Image 1 (tube, rainbow, N blue to C red):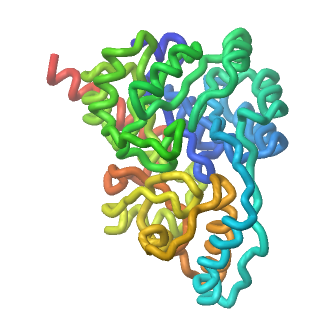
Image 2 (image 1 turned 135 degrees about the horizontal axis):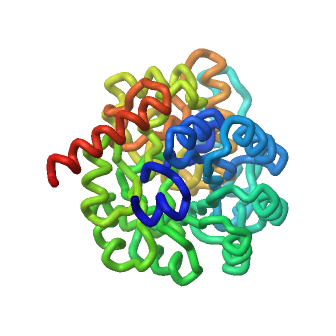
Length: 355
């Protein structure tokens, strides 16, 4: 057993990554019931939606579960910048005979300014709470810990990891550039784009708290490699997208099983923050020299979601946020419990061969 498995009371050092829009209570419960740590993603949810997810998850498992929240700097509205971005997208809306939005909204609230979500976490007391994009107030972190909640935070650099330790975080998720979904950088203007294995090795030597490897890990061989470099556990997201318990759409599943899964890229054009996914027509938008400045995250996401809705209504899915990591071609279409069983067997085979 590792520090993580003992402290979280789980059997296997495998955390299912919280993926807003894809994670479900059913997926989290299946992973937790199989001995890993399932996660529900609350970053894009209202308090009412979050409460429903907690209730559903608790009805499916009594095992430890992680709840994830977003700690980005709250968006600064800029009507001029937002209007320019809408106008830039007008030709794409025209392709589908759709009217673009007249204004853009901050479609969800950052946890750092969400007192009601903080109180909900204290009420629900999940086994773990994880932070992405930064950290909340140290006083909040301490109150969560005082309530018996294990805290995790994403770091993409040694400096971010040091900030996590200084804030009292219990374990650090070392997110490499291979990872699918949003980069967890604290400052969206600064990204060192360090790979998972290099980052894990640096943090395992630097940090006093456990390190969790995240990014590009899809099988037991990847788990063994991360653990050999000092990780106490791994966090895997893309590996679970094809599980029947996930909320991935039919179009997303089809692309993940196609040759397109070999072509993931990072773009900020969809949401306003850098994220890796299966490349589509949104990805080249910022490469055009005529592209205006992006609105803040997640205001820019409001425009992308409207464009995707217009396109998908016509059967076109080339504007969807199909977040996936560089290991996407290795995804397996099996139930989550079966996937956990396969991962553990592969990992133990590698470790046994080394021993």
